[in-house]
Length: 154
Image 1 (cartoon, rainbow, N blue to C red):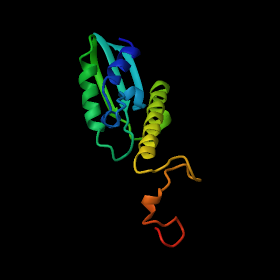
Image 2: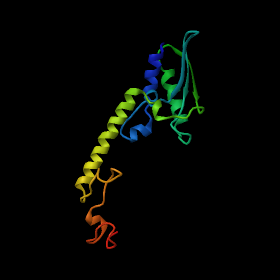
Image 3: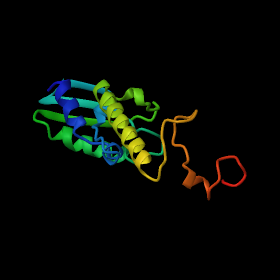
Image 4: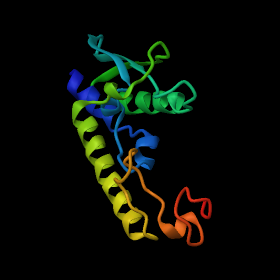
């Protein structure tokens, strides 16, 4: 048994928040595997893994641990599995794997462009103008016939 096999099994456990966001990622890619030790034991491999969550209020710690025990325990040659919930570390986006972080950033860029296009074609709203780079109100959004700031519109 080697560490790559164990990491692969752990990465098959998908973080549901990442899936809901449309960018599914496993525990390894999300940076939730905090520690991993694989050693030869009597009759096979023994693994000890520390798993974290993305924020203290996340309720997925126990389900992640149970699924990790199940998947790792089912690997050929595995005779012992210990999963520990690691609450000592605060997760940060930098904990994600470089490959997943790139995919995440690329997907967000696509979504931002799509949002700007929807704003551009929806009710005359414009994006990118003004100091904030965000959508600007159109004349119809400001109120009946008034220009922004002239007292007649909103």
